[in-house]
Image 1 (cartoon, rainbow, N blue to C red):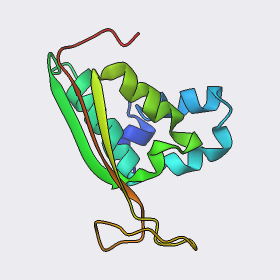
Image 2 (cartoon, rainbow, N blue to C red; image 1 turned 45 degrees about the vertical axis):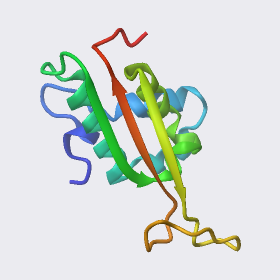
Image 3 (cartoon, rainbow, N blue to C red; image 1 turned 120 degrees about the vertical axis):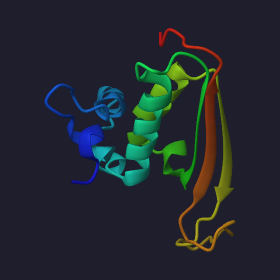
Image 4 (tube, rainbow, N blue to C red; image 1 turned 90 degrees about the vertical axis):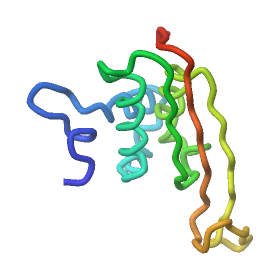
Length: 130
């Protein structure tokens, strides 16, 4: 079952992916939510939970991934972006480009056609998400 408890929850917990889905729905981007059902989104949501929300997350933390870059400006990812901004003191993004499918091809650092980006998100101490 792709997405596991991040997507579906379990007997005691609601799915934590809902934290990314609900803000996008409220913003009117519900039609695009299919784009969030992707393994790299599940990993980002799990890492954010583990590093910033889990009961053992008591202080500083860093989450960093190299992933497809669709989260940078895709409408469906509004909740992901909002959720990360609330949890982190700083987020650095390195857009590596790499659009290799359209008429305007862009070189990629990796030998793939998918545009990619590196994000590094951290916080110095536990903070109020509001």
